[in-house]
Every structure is written in C-alpha cells, then in structure tokens.
Image (cartoon, rainbow, N blue to C red; front, side, top):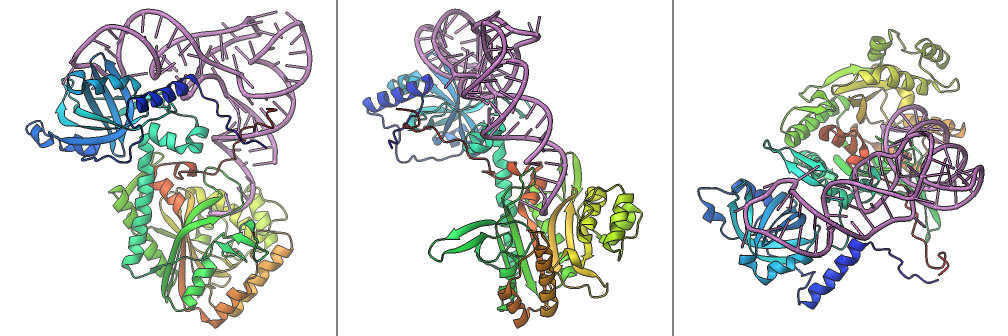
Length: 514
RNA sequence: GAUCCCGUAGCUCAGCUGGUAGAGCAUUUGACUUUUAAUCAAAGGGCCUUGGGUUCGAGUCCCAACGGGAUCACCA
C-alpha cells in the first residue's frame, strides 16, 4: 500500500510555500537555529520610561506576528511572545532592502527584532526596528482575530477561533489566538507547585507508584484494561494509588504523597475526563480530624498564594477560603435538608424515605446507593462554601476506619465546594480482620453484579496484616480545584488536551482508488 | 448509552415558504513614512461534513452515518 501524502493545500498555503522558496533563493534562511532576545514584551511595556528612553535604546524582542499594517514605506506590526503583545515599527529608511522582504512575511511568522523603544504619537510603546530577522516561516494561516485594546486596557478580540472542537483538538491554535487562556494553565501549574511545596516543607516524601497495576483498587470505578506481551497478563490503568501508598506507610515511611493521573473508564462530561489528576497523601500517627485541619490550611495556602486573596469568585458566587471551613456531620445534614432522621435505617426504610422525599432511586438500589442519591440531590447542592462533611456510613467506605464512638459510621470526611466534591479523606482502616471482612463484602457485591465494587487484593491485605500504623489519608481532585480557582465550568478548559473522539484518518491513496 | 441543538471560504457568521453561494476579517494587486479592529480601490478564494432519498430542481425538506456542544444517566 502506498503511503504518499495527500495533503490538500489552499491558495494561501501554496503562496506561503512559494514565499519560503523565494526567501531561500535570496539567501535568507527561514528557520535559523536561535536568536538572542534581550526583553519580553511585557517587560518593555512596564519598564519603559518616557523620561529615560535611552535606557531602552538597544533591545531585542521575538515573537509571532499577530497583526500587520503596511502603510507604504512604513509598517506597524504586533508580535506576541509568552508575556503578551508589543508593537514593532518598521521603516524603509532604516531597513532598506530588508524592508522590501516584508512582502514575503505573513501573520503567523515568527520574527526577531532589534531596535530602540519609543512611544508613538498615538501613545503606544513600540520597538523601532533597526534590524529584522525571520525566525520561523509559517505555512498555515492561523485563525487570529483582530483585537481592540480599550483605554482601560480591556481587550476585545474579533473573530478569534471559537469552535470548541478546534480549540480542544488543536490547542496550539487556541493558545495563539486566545492567549488569555494561558493564565488558567499557568495558575494550574502554580496550584500544583504550591501544594507540592506545602507538603515538602512538612517533610513528606513525594513518591511514584505503579500506573499499570495487576489488580486495581482504592476506589470504585471501571478500569481501562491493557495487556503486557512479555508477561502475557492483563494489566489495569490505575483508578487510584491508595493501596500502594499505604504499602509505603507499612514499610516505614511516615508521610508520602503522589500527584498523578488516574484513569476511569466512565462517561465524559463537564466534570469528568477519562484521565484526571489526583493527589493522594498518607501521614502516619494522624487521624481524620488532624487531616481536616491540614487540608484547610493547604487549600487556604494555595488560594492565597495563587489568587492573592482568601476569596474567589466562581461563576458569580463569592467563595471564602478563610479557615476554619464549615464542618457538618453527614446525618446532621440529612436532618437539616430532608427533615428526616436517616440514622440506622435499613434498605427498605431508606427506599420509602427516598420515595417520600421525591428522590428518584432504582428499587433494586443498595442502602448505600439510596443514601448517596438522597445526599447528592437534597444536600450536596447546598454545600456552596467550603464545607467538610464528616462521618459516613461504613458501607460507603470500605477502606476507612470504624468511627471511634459512632457505631455503623467511619471516620471519613469529604470537602465540598460549589456543591462539588473536591477532597476525600479517612482515618485509614488498619484493623486487618475488619479490612478483610470489608473487602470480602465488596467482592460479594461484585459477584452480585456491581462491576464497580472493589476487587480483593490479597497482597494489600497481607500488608495490612503486617501492620499499618494509625494513618490519615487524603485525596484531592486537582482538576476540580483548578476549575474553582480559575472560574472555569468545564474540565476541558483546565486540561490542555481533553479526551476527544479520534478524528477520521485521511483516506489513503489505495482507498482513494489512486 | 438517551434526548435536544449545531456542522456553509483560512476565521467569525448570514443564507426567508426548496430555484444552482453571500458579508466582514484574512489573502492577492495598487495607493499611503507614527498606524492601531488603519483607510481607500480592485481581484481571487466553497465536493455548503459524508452517504442515501423526495423533487423538474436540495445549503435549505426527509432518513442514516461521522464529528462537536448541551442536558440526563454512570462516575471524581
């Protein structure tokens, strides 16, 4: 089968390729290896002084041409670097033959400019070019809209790429055309680095555990399955790293954490992507009360350091991250929002409670599912400000330690913000007999048809039998935290490359009948 | 997986009760040495997502497929 390229090029692309050949013929290399750059755009715009313009009499900048206004023997263009845009002023008197080559330059090309900084009659700080170097010739026209900068600095962008499919599939074009979205990703990086520093300062060790696991565990979810050829075994992409991190605590580390991707073979929507980033941390000799305090301190630190404030506006709602966060026991919240005491009810009673509350549940649902459903419909939407929900029923939490005083409950909390779960934590279950009983119960639920229930991991049970010290564990959904702090309502907008259905591959020559 | 909406030029979008494709920006040519969504004049550019059907005639109506978005379900 022939694999000849069948790229279709439009008139603009063909013209640009001709320009490229023409430049080479003139002895201009369209793809030089490097360029010395002295300043970023933003640096010049903030540091330029009208009183002392000579301080910037010799600068060099580089970036992508985003706009070009040719006016005969003078040309203005805007170039964009990672910090923003700056205007370049090019004059035939200064550049001579090089100026004539401008006809071979296009929007999208990357150039380097050396010159002096000045302020135009219209008041815009610009670089007056003494020399101009082509750094990369762009062959594909990019969908850049024109932009208008108002007096107050607000930027209006016209006709920039708006199609979500294009924006997600070709994020590089999105980043060029909508540079303001970079802020989200820069903040994402800062959120993670702040979290990492918070843990490192406290002496906890960042570790790496297997992503390919022979037995998946630590959460209830359907996994992705893959196959290892040499061992001829099925392996699973991890749905959580909990069981491995606990093994390290058993091994003698007293604080370990991991920030990395989990994979869950479930539906996709505004808050779910098949691969997502989680942080899990385990600290020995601590319990969930301690972990709650640690969590609110960590979140507060992240918010104040990345948002320069303790409050954040999310989709029009002001959220306060001042400590302490609200705390509420799960069954107290049921009392408050349903008017019913659901403590200790069996499956049949919960089912009739759900019916009387107009919560739609499957009549075959387990007690755990019914409680979960009532909670998510009637309680969760009220948890707008950061709120710790504590003390869950044991059936919902097979890896959490039995509550020290409340029978039937476990020492667990979840952090809710804007009605969404952001963190989940327990006093970890370290009674090996209890742990075995709970996992066997999960295995039974699984045998009864719930393929999301946990699988028994004998080596994990063995490890707990060796002896896990009292330990507190926490998991945080990084993507959701980033969404909250960057005011984005879709997970796709906080991931550079959200999962998309693969595009149809271009037809090959043979299929084409060539 | 279900339902609804969307798919037209490189980009943003028009296109009425079916009559063979339109604008702005971008591109090309010309004018213009401090412009800024530069301006002015002219020009080129479309398998209207794909495949069927109805019709004398389909961008438009019907069916299906593909891709996207939203809502729901599952889940974090």
